[in-house]
Image (cartoon, rainbow, N blue to C red):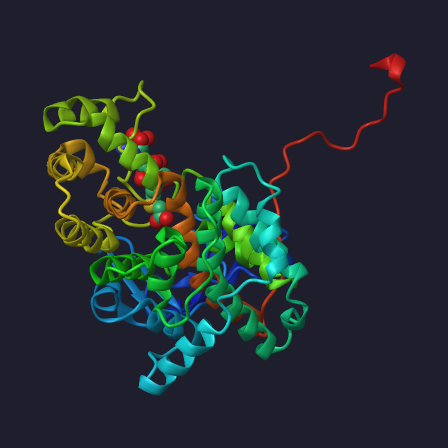
Length: 428
Ligand code: CMC
């Protein structure tokens, strides 16, 4: 049999199916015509064996712990690039030269302000509203304000919407934080970097000047890079599903926010930090490792394990290094970091974790950094959604530009009753 063809036999009939090759990763069996030729569907809840699209953006080899954006490793990008460069790379396919980066950063900075009317939305929320609830509402509401960039068939409109989303997200996120602490909103300062501006809008107050700490600015910028995109993860697939129907860009991205809010997605960062705080001291680690292994105990080691990575999550390595930099800069001696390091070492040497290939993921160390910088736990998911916005818009643009793009509409294995007569109420 040719290696670009697979044969599926059902009963007495065999069907030839094409096999498609990517530039990296497993080949895929193309089953698009299977229903037409065989009257069968495939069954794959959770899409663990299904590629939903072709994409040239991000590649993950979960067994080897590899993450590439447009062919560049996450380790190199987080070491050498800025979040603006990575955003340009994801959107445009290549790293920008000096002029392209300057122009792109300028364009983004021109869209950082929000329509003033949007600020009144916040006052409709309770002060104790979860910032992700506010984000879902305000991001979705952008569709009501920016009518001039919602024709998704026009590449120029798509790019303007993408720039607006990337540019406005720090402003919207910082305002959600300010609202929760009862402080006045701080308007953007376009003389600052993308991340410096966000830090100022979040932690600055009108009463005194805010000086951006370059070490913290770089650390947060790196965290943004680490979360910029992650292939067809749940929230990106949600964005693709909503976007496949031609939905307005801002509404599509608010669907991504709703999905990312889930505790099984990045909500684990806060849970990992809370777990480390609960463990408290290294002598209590063995007790928690035993609990994680006990099938009768629902407890899991938060920040450990991943649907795709069956090796060390490369983002966790960068995070661990960044924790050291941030704690040393802020002169914080957080005992929780020592607990995290020892917990990692103990788990990685434990047969249960070795056998199940459970390694620290991106969420294991990030909570320690974000908390040291001053973000409350509720803001962690907001920060990841802010950075993932770049991946969402880049993937959404790629999908809409694909002439073979289809509406995302899976089928099912129906297990309910077959057609039956309708009983009158007296017969039930
Ligand atoms: N602690 C203890 N046991 C675990 C853990 C853990 N953290 N993770 C998985 N296992 C066990 C699980 O009990 C199962 O055991 P068995 O085979 O005996 O039933 C086995 O490992 C496989 O687990 P699974 O849940 O079937 O694997 P999955 O790939 O569906 O789940 C996961 C991945 C991330 C949901 C899971 O590892 C988990 O719950 N981790 C803790 C939460 C967490 O850190 N989430 C953040 C993920 S990274 C987010 C991102 O990239 O955006």
